[in-house]
Image 1: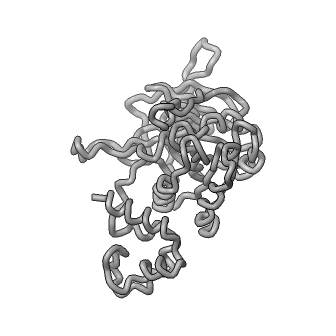
Image 2: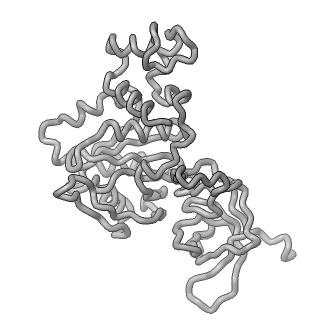
Image 3: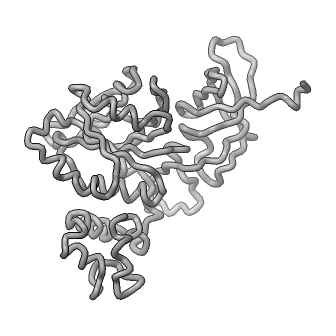
Length: 314
């Protein structure tokens, strides 16, 4: 076979560290890679390379044990988690910063207690996932601390809406098989506030102490930050995990007061009952959503979350 007809090596970006990338090719070879001025991308004006990207490679001859290569092309992404832009900088030409690419599902990790479960936080994650048309799994960790079974009552509205929920205890290794089942064969992005046990869960799932774990700050009740960069880990039973920063880092700029209502899935049934097609479901008379809340057809706490997010949008 002629050289120009040789198959171009393609790999998956597993780790990003500054200008250096760890890529595993389809034949299982592990490469230390870099980009160069001629590196091309099929993803527009965004970060050139991110964890989860599929890339084409060109081999570099070295005498080191770890093979080296140059990334020549970044293939199209079917999904991306992007970092929220700082609007105070007013940089319209600033590139979109991609946290992770080609995600199959978003895994939202919360804790039953310590820090306490926040349904408002869950709702913000779900709005983000719905806006990206991304599958979501809600993992409620630290269930060993839930003596009064209040957590399952708080989560009942999400069960009713059809969201997949897994209850775990990383401390007692409960619920891990159920979690492994929903992760198998998929590229899953884990996200959640520090202190919820996310890193401990990932370490147990991956079978390696790759991520540092943290505890809840006793003075503030908030988690101590342990994750600094996105990194992909291989699951022994198949699939990949990417550990990501929290929801506040995600780009919510595409969500407006006009389209927010479409990302609360229970609203879709009742919106045709509104007198106005552009009803905001906040103050309008004859609002189908508000009537559904009054009748109990829509959970009032979920509606309160909608109002809180609506007010937070410029």
